[in-house]
Length: 134
Image 1 (spheres, rainbow, N blue to C red):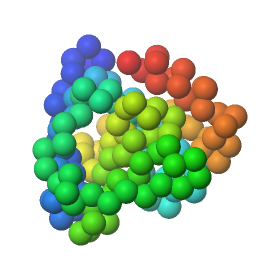
Image 2 (cartoon, rainbow, N blue to C red):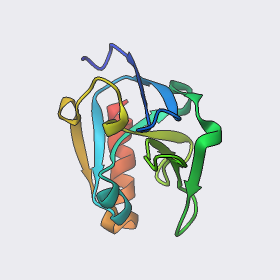
Image 3 (tube, rainbow, N blue to C red):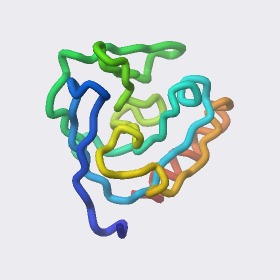
Image 4 (tube, rainbow, N blue to C red):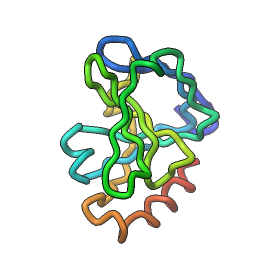
């Protein structure tokens, strides 16, 4: 897929209670090593809010926050899968878990390695990389 050819993908949680549609402009994503992402196996596709549509399941979501409480880690209250959230690095955007997208493999994406263990020192480089990926 070329970056000039947007594609519409759907995804969601394991039980199907939460479903969404996302416009993917480039298969460029983020692999973070912070404690939460490492434990969840989360692979990040950060998109503009206008390119994300929650199809169903808003009422099935539970939200977890910690630290600064800026990030809103949403997960399905039935199956526990974290399929998308609001990231601290980009609170005005939506971060989709690539592992929860239908019909694609994590191997289909190119990754930027984000040092989330050292978030404060690394976030500006992540933001710059996201601007370049758009």
